[in-house]
Length: 503
Ligand code: AHR
Image (cartoon, rainbow, N blue to C red; front, side, top):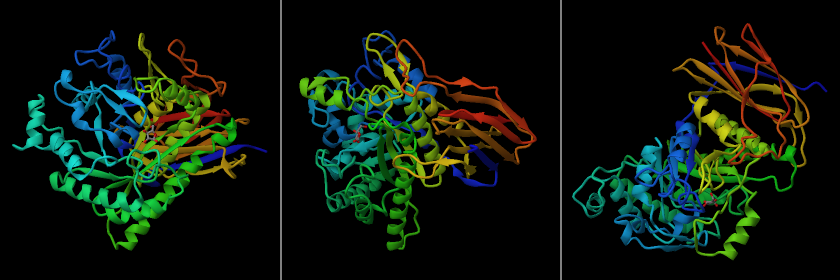
């Protein structure tokens, strides 16, 4: 069978403008994300605040626009006051989410300062597990208000005169999950989030709020959770959250690479549920989606269980340190394409997470920082995937896998950036056995030329990177034709492709 994919790109086939926050990420007080990750005062590259400059450089390279903080499961029993004020007065606490000791040497003010240096915005989560309306309001006052009030003055007393003006706030984290400290029924969460949202918007009406969605499509209460909680929060919030992690525990690469179809199914179901609530409420408002936890997560599962049991309440244990391989990079590329395909409704997303914990960036406590395989597709999407997502009109050969049917050989999307007059095609040939003849008709882009064709291909599926070796990294490809607006190449089996056109 001839394997081919034909794509048509036209400036007029628009999905929507891609919100830059689609390329957000996440730092939780978990494992070595903070301590020995972004913060390590005794590291040779640390600045006077203790921030590792080698890590900041890599975060800047990724151009991450927004970072969710401080959790995650961690936030559901977090007392933010523990992490502000003079460091020698801060108390260590038990972190119940990860059976870890939290020394509170790094907190809110340090994170805001770090984020400024890393050229990113803060997305703050409030604790709706063990706390509630008042504590969320106090935190917001501390962060955003310039009044002669108790918490504004507390911030000033801590040395931070100007408010931070943090724009995006998450109303709790995964509140449907039985593992969550202070988990709630949908009714309990709906009422609590509604009242918290109402009060927070009274304090600062300019903020955007995220209502907690299900912790994953596999939760037994999905999508009832969304429909019940949103009936309460719909009028006050701007986004609903989605979380999902993917794995190849079955060691079935073909089926693994089809899992971006599951992500799309999840997105479509959440959109449908939001629109059901909209119709029920006779509302004119369209709710947006914040896919604020997504990634591959499974390599470290067993080691983590063992570590938590063997060394409970230790400081910065190496938890969730998944080492990603080549097939993980391909799936991350596919997931990014899925997010871009839904750019009209998914307006925010966070690769979970950013440093050491299921992360594109790893650090060695005694050495440097290094790039995992998944660093690269995220980098390409974040840097070149800004602008308008164009409708992917593609005819492609398909295949079946053990759990998915009609899996497209090639998944692709094009992003048009009118500012710098560039258009970029992101494509994955997820057929692991066969190359595909790929053609793209660039209508309306006749006077464009190929600027660069970046690929990740030809690696062993299980190849990984490390501090000492970057086995899996992109290269450029010259083996293509571009004639009269028609681009043609033999797209290698199992490959990530970034084709950049410009004037
Ligand atoms: O990102 C790791 C964890 O995954 C987060 O703390 C939690 O929200 C999710 O279950």
